[in-house]
Length: 568
Image 1: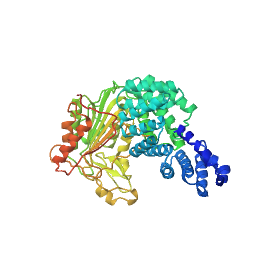
Image 2: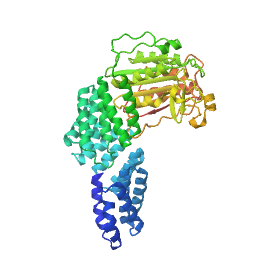
Image 3: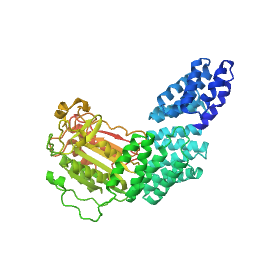
């Protein structure tokens, strides 16, 4: 990006040569068209030049372009797009298409970004920077093969582009080529040892390989570099790299069982986020993981005998689940919960059967399973937190929940069996927030499969009708579609979320021993050699057929490659 902006500066000499531009040249020109000008001053100067109405055509396009640069510094991508669009209308240029494509990329509109980078390349000459940027857009879409092809072109144009080697390595890692990824990341570090981001990327590779000491060492060096040399790229928030460094090192400490150091790193992350208005995602994940490692700071010895029955299980009369073995790197783990014996809302006969069937299918294909049936809030919260903590050392994590669920203010909650909404009481305090589970699994090193056979009706309908309307209760049926936890989240990188029915719709409990969805799931989940998304397609077809199209399972996937729950 910076090279294109500097090259575009060549046009500014002609811009200020016109006699009519004397005022702009003397007072406003340097502020508008100097890349190092602070964003607010740049935008104000360019706006005043436009207001003079002395420029047209290519000259006016130049001013709009530079104002877009100012908006880009401020992170106002809608205004970047508006100004670059006007610049392109006045005089199409490679730089304007590239800048607009970058803004669309930052907004997550990868298809439009790719089209803009295509147009930029058509205007020529071939640019390694634009190939690199288009590679980023392909990577955003999950098309890692095309991303690698564009990074190849970027590296051919500029063999010393550390960022292109870095991003090609990230793409190779996403495709499971850890050796190729490591080679590219190593080359990026050799080309520019002062960059912290490649070290952070290598941290995740070491974690994926189970080499936690190297991961911690790279994370420490990345943090040092990020503190000494904040990013100069106007596209990068000042503390985002430092936050990423602390988070990745914390995850390595956690995977190693060093909860004290992990706790300090999560605290450092939260301190930076609080002082810098950091991303919602970073804050949510750090809070969840900090609470988990705080609980584990003085862990019960692994060889300590497990209690025969928990208080929560005594209340419901359920049989306690078997204690899972300690998690080690490479473990495939599952958390299975089925709630049906509700005390204060409509009871459901099938979720316990569903949970047992899915748990049995996963154990049969080698998963370490934590299984809970008819859990009250205390037991459900403890089992969830224990699982999230152990999942830091897992390669694949599956979460399955059957029972009641509800959406409140667009957020999804899973309902323990002892939930009771009373007038004046906080509705969500008695439930388990699905976003907490998602934040706790926010780590692209691991594959996450989350499956919810929930919201078989709206269990809170009567309570919602009588509750204070100021609570903002969403009385609609069904669960809400999951949304991103915020800018900077890795969630969605290596994650699949599946619902028994479409967002806003009601799932059926079924007339047999299992719900239609869970019956199909337990039959297909252990099929050898069946890729997980193909497996869910078979489940969907079976459910649609069984329910005569009354229920259509739904999923959202951002997996980084093919995932097989049962070996081929």
